[in-house]
View 1: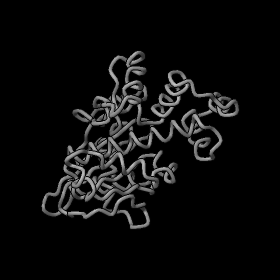
View 2: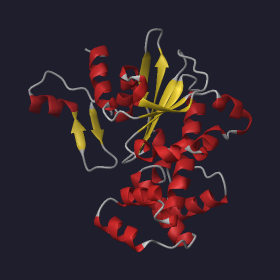
View 3: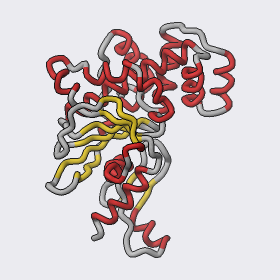
View 4: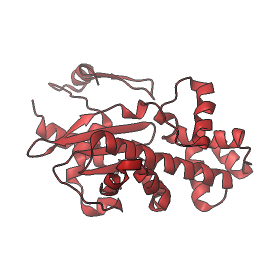
Length: 261
């Protein structure tokens, strides 16, 4: 959001706060990043709105961060001002994708052939899961499951891949989701290092609650903590999955309350 206006990267929209205010008959409309809104909403959630992946040893005044894979990959942070955590927007999901091993290096080269530059959003999002699936199919020659291909053609490909993976109905889909989860953990750990998120990392977005059974497994947290000499620090950082799909809406209301000007 720049000067009350945003051009969305994954939808053909331009949203202008002044135009919205005029159309709605309001004095003013403020626009905020969706992940910033999620960060505003976290203090309003109850304990049962979270699933804890790592209890860690939280430092309440420490920075917190939110990472959310969905249509794209969003990231945000919030810093303690002495009374509350103040959210800050970010476009960290568009940072360069950094492979950790030979398989991920092959994935980078595969996607670079299509897109030139490859961001984390190219692998960590709904379309990103589809990209991983195609890579494993084309480069590793894993066989497709006809029923899954039909479902992908008729609806949302990433949702079809996820359903088949969780049902154990497609080895290719299962491997794609496993790699997705590992990459998700790795980038969440990267965000924790960048922000020094001793207050906690929160995993939001539409995908995480749907794949919670895979997130509970070892792959996410192993990737999150695999940071060499800084691994002991990552082990102390709390990691929670946000289960409440109204968090951003609640956060928008809290933002309006805290920023009434």
